[in-house]
Length: 186
Image (cartoon, rainbow, N blue to C red; front, top):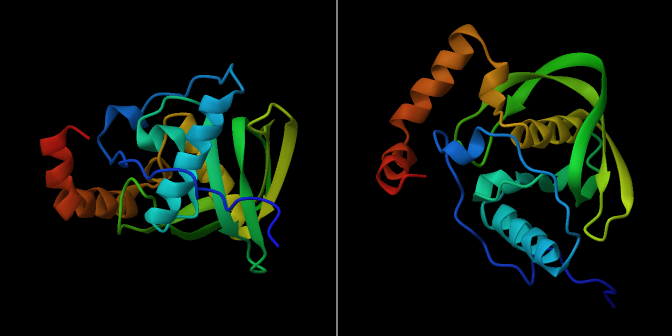
């Protein structure tokens, strides 16, 4: 018998903000109210992430300018990491910098080899305000760094240079969703 609900099962998927949307460029605001509204936001974020087949989602990717992200991400040993962080701060990165494939729900269908540290430590809080520290290695460390970037107003494209960056931006300009983003303002 399951003692907890499945994350996102009581939430509703929200529209994703795509590359070029101003919601993705500013830093998120600190959460000050650990209440039912925050819990509902986290449920909607899980529902949105699962509907889009992602492994992480930051609040600004659905147009909410708060420092919150959710994740359901494996590490390199295929161990599942499931949770959320409120007011997260990337407090430590170390290990080798590895260029690995990285994509984003705000740039659907586009990946690029992106340099990230192999280990990351993020502190923050649960939806009820309890302090949390999350440590990730491998792919999960990449996810943690990626989501923290979002909450600081950045995208993985910001870590790319030269030809890799030009290819991603060119692919994004040609993507079917780029025209939709222009017409909807998202």
